[in-house]
Amino acid sequence: MSQQWIYLDGQYVTKEEAKVSVYDHGFLYGDGIFEGIRIYNGNIFKCKQHLDRLYDSAKSIMLEIPLTYQEMQDALVETLRRNELRNGYIRLVVSRGAGNLGLDPNRCPKASVVIIVEQLAIYSEEAYKTGLKTVSVSTRRNIPDALNPKIKSLNYLNNILVKIQSNLSGAGEAIMLNSQGYVTEGSGDNIFIVKNGIIVTPPCYLGALEGITREAIIEICEKKGYKFKEQPFTLHDVYVADEVFLTGTAAEVIAVREVDGRVIGEGHAGPVTLKLLEEFRSIVEQDGLKVW
Ligand code: PMP
Image (cartoon, rainbow, N blue to C red; front, top):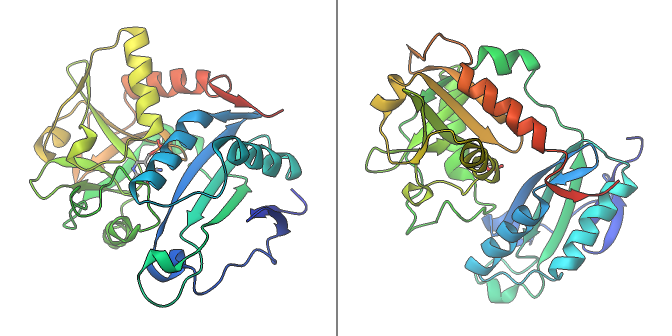
């Protein structure tokens, strides 16, 4: 990618020109929403699901996106084309737009839309075999009746505090609990455990984003007849699991080898995790919207 083009409110501008107002409520208050999407060999993986989640998040926070669904999809495709990107990551941001210093979103006449596409710095292939060292953290997941984790909002301070704590422990990712002590998700991924051949993930109402990779894994389980359950669980269940793995657009399906000093299974990626990663990678170039 020689020159990077960024979509900013209807214009395609360079990285240097891509600037938004300091009065933008996305900047002042984290008032807005976003999506992280991947393109695999010219296919925007689960494009519809990502756009649906974006428009659902917007509806939930009463943010009017100034583009129709089709216009948004067209802008996404055009940004990828202009950057000649076949493989990479797409960041779609809709902020409340510029207002005044007060909180009131009614003072922000127009939402701002930004699309950034880039090559992706992901985990090494080695990390998918060795797995990640993780810790549970004392910071609890936002409670759904304060700020629902199903909304993919620009307010990621909860996740950032968790990331700071996991960095301080020298871990690669953190496990967040809710205020009842149930496991919810990682700082930027959903979590699954495998015990006695059964694959389990917590229900999102406990405090997790409805991850699109999570959904893809559930679909694979159903299609291939793997035993799967959506069920609340605690840290104890994580510690004694045969396998633990995380799912997310950037991370795909990555094993966890250690949680709070407890070695999980054999201490590296287990057979179910590796099989699911393989199945997942076999669909990423088909399931979605073809750009090229
Ligand atoms: N949970 C959180 C908090 C996230 O930020 C993400 C990444 N967007 C996920 C889960 C995974 O979601 P997805 O599979 O849709 O990327």
